[in-house]
Length: 229
Image 1: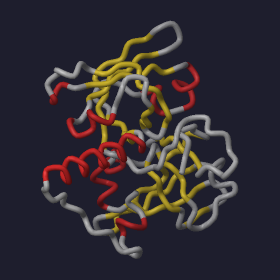
Image 2 (image 1 turned 60 degrees about the vertical axis):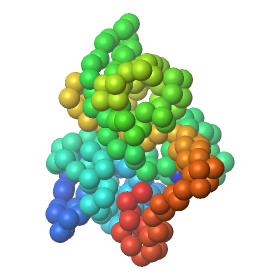
Image 3 (image 1 turned 90 degrees about the horizontal axis):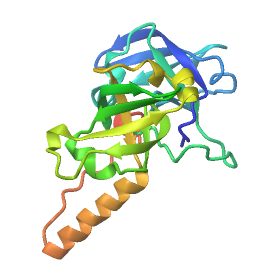
Image 4 (image 1 turned 45 degrees about the vertical axis):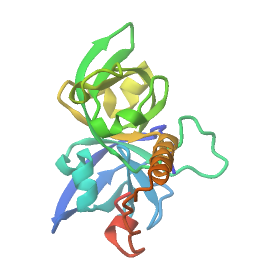
């Protein structure tokens, strides 16, 4: 579990292909200072498990499902990542509840600078539209943010968008400060919104007497269960 408050900017130092997955090595001396084998670290919003480490780097395996669903599929040596260690019990929740389980990606449509701050508009995938609300919480590349505007409800689904406003600290301390139109970011919607949508769908299915397809739980030793979060 994370809070979306970024601790440091890390740098990808190696991307090694292993079949349909990759071993990702990241330079992040702050987040590895107390890391142990098996610990979780959020990398631009994607929760990964530490399998190897040095005093300044850590390595994690990124499975195919994660590569397909996130912007991690295009990572290369030299790319920057927002890094955050898992929250400890008793920590202040400075952002919001972030799981590191991304829903997909969004593309930067446009940016507009204010007096030290920046407004950024992103595309909104049709399946995510019900989960993004004005003044609600959202995590972009692992950064906890507040949605400042969303497209009207009658906007065509393929033209839906949402906006966030970035303060100087966010622009300086995270990768969002360098994003330009066309760039993709990892998106995690509010976990509470996901549960509400699921419950409403189940209630509607029960009321209509129809069945709701349910994906069987992954085995505890499967890649989906252990890494693609």
